[in-house]
Length: 470
Image (cartoon, rainbow, N blue to C red; front, side, top):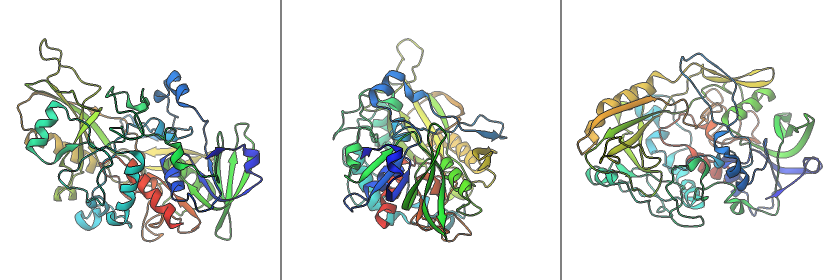
């Protein structure tokens, strides 16, 4: 994968143009390696090397998303305009969605089923885990697997050792924070959004995996629209940092920016149908702390455990699934002499449903998010988890405290949903637009529903799958 000047890119005709350079774009490109295709990635932001990111502490500097928020609660959206996108600042958790997450309508009468099944996607989940050097364990077999985890799970905290022994719904957190493989082993510093030792998978530290002699990229170049003739895409119109417009020609276009930007490009282009931008959502998070009668922590990574006790069951007809994260670092200390480490720090993460009024619209040709709030379904799931928490904690605790709802989980989902027909979605099971089949939307924007599990592994596998269909 080689850098290219924009003026040189405009002189060529490309087999594939990919808008973006993060997980969705690069894992799609991985499936194109060795096939003789000329591929150009178009990155809106600059190329910032790792040393510069460390010097500038870039983990705390996301781009601003314009929005009209009528929810009554603070709402943030995490977008990153630089080479590698969100891979530069993600935390690195990689739990799989469960088979039930793909069949919400069939099983629980809620939302929509995916048109792609878990079993169809599973080989690509295993491939994505291998590329990321994921460390993990699935002792309970909740997510069927065709291959073992590439590396063993990180060491659990002292509290997790008891949780794991008492209930198989508690497991090690699968993650792309190294426990063997190409990168340094995780130092458990708890500063994972900008890992100080580069133990977490990023596009930058794995760029060699995505290299091909015919793969190129341009930076500081924003995609504005997809150009079409007679229902076929012919390329994209882009804007450079001097606000000059250019046309790039291609036989196939993959929109692999974040879900807000993908919807923005389609809305400007007049493509994708009436559902483009609708149903934007993400999970709802809430921290909680329990004081316990023994020292905790001493785990091998920042988030070392995951709980599925509130994840699945008939309750999902009325209340959201909730994933539980068990945190090792940064720790929460108990401010009592001799009891500093006697605390369990957890986080509830609830799935949400796509609501049509939560959407991306254009104002002056630029994206604005209309946000009316998370669904009652999501809040019902969190209320259920708070009520039932004592049932899944096998030891005594006191001083249970809950934090406020988090303003973001940094997982933008929806806006270009997958469906069986154009009446119900924007793309088909191969992530292609119904109205322009040589355009794909990639990333979590195509998820019909937003599960409680982190979406990054699934969206990466989906890009591997979609690229294999080209």
